[in-house]
Image (cartoon, rainbow, N blue to C red; front, top):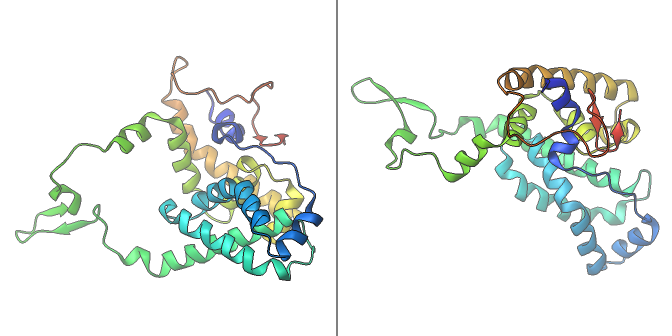
Length: 242
């Protein structure tokens, strides 16, 4: 299986589906009126995709649940100031990416200064060691065992290594299935910038996936990555061929 094929079918790997745009006027009116039912429906529609987007665009995906919750708080508090300059979906994703960006800045300022169990330290005798080596159980956790067995997790790691802002553009296009114009609107950049970032992001990702694919044999039991009803191509988004 070629790296380009895997790259081109990210949307199929992650199960992303392009959702039809709702009839927004009535929904927005209900949200502005404070309808708890409308807000609950909004959460049900957007929680999973926003969580997915945030988890893939921040350094530590463990922070994604709290950030996703903050996003919905901001949506609830800010819906009164939404005047329809963009679609409701675009506005929501813009808030999510803004919160993810804030978390990345916080990470750069604070999180990297923390000591992790993988960090190498020096013992009294000068010998290096890691905190995790002092744990009683030296075996891999069930999560680690499962992660090592899944191609999806390996691709997730490769996506996380793509530098910003290329990673966010790749996630929005190839995983979340947004169109070029929508991405330009969400990121507040021109269409040419979107295409340039997407091209460079895909190149970064393809380079990271190439060694992985080279080590996989044609008889591998890994999940098939070809989208249903189509043939594999170099780049396929959630909404179809690019």
